Image 1 (cartoon, rainbow, N blue to C red):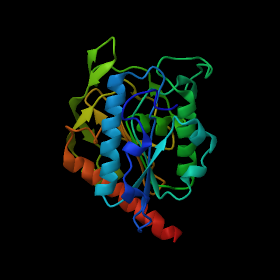
Image 2: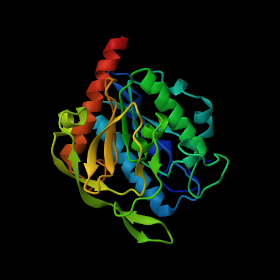
Image 3: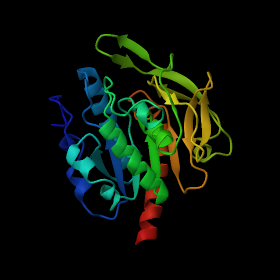
Image 4: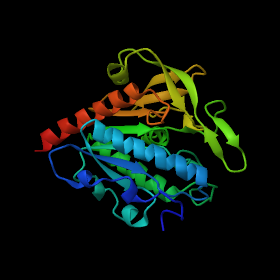
Length: 271
């Protein structure tokens, strides 16, 4: 069972009837793990809210979202076949990535809260999607997965990018943080080459940037906050959470409108 008994973590709760209507809208996969080992109630609720906001952002931008549960063993068994029929993919936030994917830690080592099967599923699909030049947006964990998938490394722990409300339950709160976007980047074309105040809530982040990617946004402590692929049509990862309830609604709309536009372009090429 992928929901681990948590209320709300069911695929049906994130999809609407309109999402299954083949009406010409570009189809955007929204990848999230609806279960993770040791998932607390607070983490489940946060995942529920962010996933609901992310799928709605796709609809609001004119896309048709299809939620992909990366923790589902049947979905994992499909390899990367699920990418067929999609025009773009958004990888949402979630649990830590197993360090075995970017260090010499044994992948067989069990770590609290970590699901290497979901990690493998995401990493392999990112590699395939990048190879196929699919439009990709990674958010928080999604940004880290993008970097790891292309050969980069991850900071195991970074202080100061979230509030910990309860050490015992793992409940966290997001913080407002200034992020500087690099002028001339694709991300700057979307959001502007300026300082944005974003909602952050992470303790891991991109460390060594994959050779295929460029770092295009930084926090004031110089932690990488966004990356992009300079040689692909549209592959971007952002560390912050534009889909948080308290994030700037225009930033969310603009970012998702950009990837849905790219999805429409990809759909037109395939037609």
